[in-house]
Length: 196
Image (cartoon, rainbow, N blue to C red; front, side, top):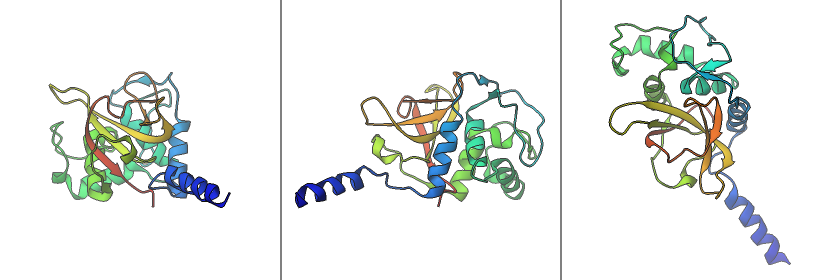
């Protein structure tokens, strides 16, 4: 009987994610709470308030999912990315031929978010093993192997049908949804930020 209890406890401990904090739990719950397949994918430029600005809830892009989930735990990526870009503009991509920061859009660009997470978070190993991606981690991808179409999502606590991969909360055009897409695209980044 005692051996059975020890084995059961060992199994429960082994099943727990490698990284979990009250903040990461809240972040993952906030990300899951964003699920809405009716959100229209709309990358158009919009003027928004600063700080704390957002496009209307019924529209958004992949970066908006990340920004909205972080806001739920008191982290405003719009403000943080804008301030970091103002101080270290040359550290950020010049993909858009920008000559100055723009608080309306900078935080809504995947490459800027990835740069911010690299600079201020933890850059984690990219692997082909779903167990290495824990709830709350941020993953970036390139959707087009022949070009550059950056994408971003949040690792959730839900698992794929076979239990081998975590589902990701993202928006790639089908609304803000949780899907089994971890290895569907070429992973370009794996990060953890602000969840200690």
